[in-house]
Image (cartoon, rainbow, N blue to C red):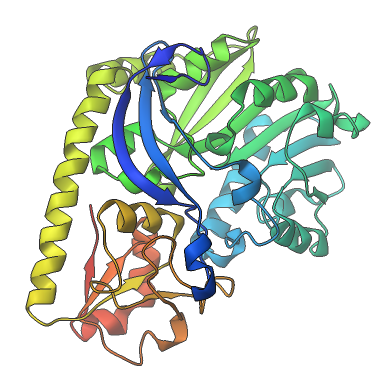
Length: 398
């Protein structure tokens, strides 16, 4: 039995994905022997409808001076964050001199949309390398975690912040209590918290278990967000489905006096009907994960028996879960092509598949390419028209 990170009550483990390395821990050959592993098990709390990791590395091990993800590297995500910012301006920016905070601001892709003089912005980004890029681009980024100790030094944002933003970051925060208390300290009386995260309902539907890895400590639903924040001085006032990360949900929270959109009740009814808010859905998901693993292993082994070559496309964080859970190594997948300088020339976490510069993808034809970045499939297919015309085929675990 494990403890719910919110209620502190004992909850049962639902799925054990086994031994896992740090998802973004791409490494050199000389570091294989000292690679860090932990046991990745998942539990579900009935009280707050929350799926959580039972164990995970310390945040400092994942978000550090060499974080290998840059938001600006994806054209799709750059457009998404521009639209996200424009939506927020239309819907929630009512006054001049609006104060905003972004948590996990990365290289400043989102905040650059708020650099005009009628906005005061502050980005919290603990990974030094991406935070430094944001600073060079004129973003007010600080290389620290978002908590009360670090916030209190920025007096003009304490009790005066209008909007706190996040995207695929709240699920990274082990201490949700500290996160909520820090938001409470930052926001003014009418302030809002707006963040979007991979959606539990979408993960169940797609059986996209690769959404679960060390950084994703929680998989949220509308039910869980409503129940968790209701414990404090906040309430869920609106939700907006998103197509990022294979299916996400944008949540808007305000203090308890704020008006609530009636559509939330309809969403809660859907989650109840589809067992997203209870343990039955989690148990069904476990069965589907095990079946998905068997099917994928069978598919890949059959391709190899025919003497065909397989490469990987996109050395994503999510690929670490797929490769290690399904025990897929370099005997199955020759290499993984990627564009990220921090990953090229290194090896994938755990399974140690070589990461090759993307510029060589077109040099040697692979009949099959495992699309680890499946959530960017549309963007990738537009880019790889020639690969598909040659008869190339994508593989996914979905």
